[in-house]
Structure formats: structure tokens, C-alpha cells
Length: 259
Image (cartoon, rainbow, N blue to C red):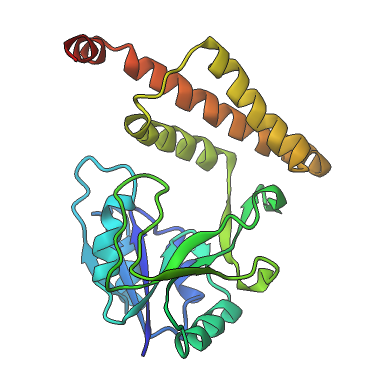
């Protein structure tokens, strides 16, 4: 019984080699590419990966391609990894030991360590991700930040074992802002029916800042901690603002009047 690693990609030439270097010892690596325009596919093939293509179309997130990636795996157990993440040897060994006697478990939540400005973001840990699952019976909703459904019991890797956590690459502020804009836009359709008013636009970003900076302890990390908390607050603000904008377009208002 083996394990396939699947990676969804779009223009990940910069990140992919570091990710693939950390995947030695797995039975198979599948790269599901969304028609990259850089060297992503060439890099994947040079590492001996199985490459499949998912038409990008108008997609700006990877979730619509997750099902195809998982079902393209040759082995019954699948580890889903993003190109800007790395897997520790300890996690690899843990997963192989696990599939020797999984019982009725069909999915595992894996903790993830996030880094911002090259600092471990403790306030976000364990940020558990359902990334290890049985291929058969799995389904991944095509919605941003969604978790897959599996046919069986779901378990968690203990967060105290930080050596078993996925490592999420530290992003530059430019990358953070670009991703924030893309992700908040992708969430608008999902949350379009959410009522947004002035009170929510003032309070919700403030609450997220307070929760991360004070309750989450980001204040301990100086300027970097303040930037992290402020970034999350701004992200919530722009998401609410985009929902408000979408709800107040003539097309949406006309639709509401027809209901």
C-alpha cells in the first residue's frame, strides 16, 4: 500500500523545486497544473512527476482542480501539498507507519506552521489542514479554503508534534497583498448574501486585529507581529467592502427586486 503526493499548481516555478526536494521517499508525485505559463510543468517533469492538466478558464483558486488531482493518484492514500509548502521526513515516516494500521480512519488533519517575514506565526498554529485522505470516496468542494469530505472517520495528528507539521513558506509583503486581493475576491460569490453595513465594516476588522494582536500574542513579535495582525484586519475589511460592492451593483439589486 503506497502514498501519492498531489500538488495543484499555477505558475509555481519559483516554489516547486523546494517543495519537490522535500518529497523524496514517497511512491508517487502528481502535479495537477492549471495551464501554467512559466516553467512549472518542465520542472515537474524533470523531477519525474506525473503531470495532469486542469483547464484554468476563469478560475483564480485551486479548489476546482483538487478533485482531479486527488483522483489522478495511483495509490489509495493521498497527501495533498501546496507548492509553497514542505513536508518533513518525520511527517513522511509518520504517514507510512499510519497506513499500516489505519483502522476506520479515512482522513487526517495535519498541523501547519505558517511563517510571515520569516517568523513563525504562533498565533495561527496549529492551522490544521485535512490533507491526508483515502482517494476513494473523497470529494473536494470547488470553494476557496474548503476541506474535502471523506468516506470514513477523520482523525488529527497531535499539534504538540511540531516536527510533523507542514511548513508553509514565508511570503513577502508583495505576495501577501496579491494573495489577499485574489482570495477576498474569490470569497465574494460564496458570501454574497451576507448583509454588510457600516457597523460590521468597523467592528469585524477591529475584532480580528484584537484577537490576533492581543489574544493571539502577536504583540510579542514587535513590528512583524503588528504587520501580521493588521494584514488580517485589512483582509476582512476588503472582503466586506467587496461584498458590499457586489450587493450594490445594479445587476444584483435587480435580481433582489425580482425575488
